[in-house]
Image 1: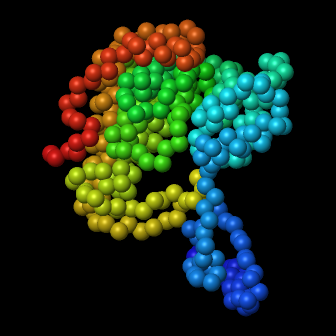
Image 2: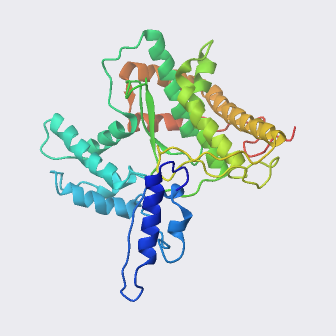
Image 3: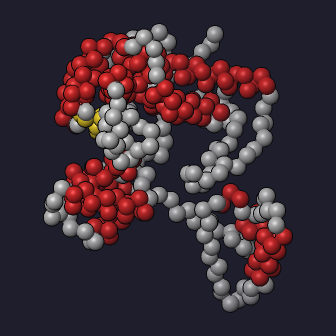
Amino acid sequence: MPGAGHDEKAQTLNQLLAEMDGFDPSVGIIVLAATNRPEILDPALLRAGRFDRQVLVDRPDRKGRIDILNVHLKKISAVADLDIEAVAALTPGFTGADLANLVNEAALVATRRGANATTLDDFTQAVERLVAGLEKKSRILGAREREIVAHHEMGHALVALALPQTDVVQKVSIIPRGIAALGYTLQRPTEDRFLMSRSELNNRMAVLLGGRAAESLIFEDVSTGAADDLVKATDIARNMVVRFGMTDELGQVAYEPETGSFLAGATPVWRPRTYGDGTAEAIDHQVRQLIERAFETAHSILERNRSVLESSAHELLAHETLGPDDIAKLTGQLDRHVPLSRPILATDQR
């Protein structure tokens, strides 16, 4: 295997290859193996006659999630009219283990409120706990920080509501969750997605930068609250440039392969750079331009809807959480006509 520094690893591989080559083809033996790191397998294992058939066990689609939920729901008491399809719609990207944990969390939520059966609202709260983390009501923010967080989160929400083809905003809160989140805007896709267009990626970056845009519009200075947003927006912009060929200046070229491993959280495989310094400088320039245009989009939306931003932030400060009904009211108040100095799909020709 690549990177194998111990003799026992090489010996094990060689012995496995020798044993597989010694099988009698007339006996009909089938050898199965599983791994979550296919990218580090030795090519000798994958050649014809060995492990030459690869079956991807991917995350379940909507129908698969419904089937998995039906299995785990037998272990808890749920209301008779529980809409399992609605639960499945809230959980795109969840694995089987995630769904099992979701059912358990929903049952715990129902138990804490003294109910005899689990409802759809319990599942919604369980999704929030799994996605955003546990509420940290003991973490007390100062008045100034609460005001900044409220405007930051409403910036995300209003940009998402104003732009087309964005995930549905389900909840906005300034109750701290998890390790570092001082507030959160919960968006969940309502369907499984396998492709994203350039405009959708631009809109997603604009939503991520909506918090920073709101802070720059309302306050004299910006805070460190957008750190994670900037990381995610930069990652999207860089992938658009080096992997998806979505800029005219650099053309329909993939300058870098996918760097992520088969499973999220696994260590990426390092690869040397295959382009020159001039191309690297052009890539950096295009990434900055994409992010700047996304920020301009978010800032323009919020500037035209400043009154809605301020009133909704004050409401969020008063109630700490805005639910679907509150968000629906905001949608009707928004001015969605946003004149842009430059089209968000156009690439810089300067």
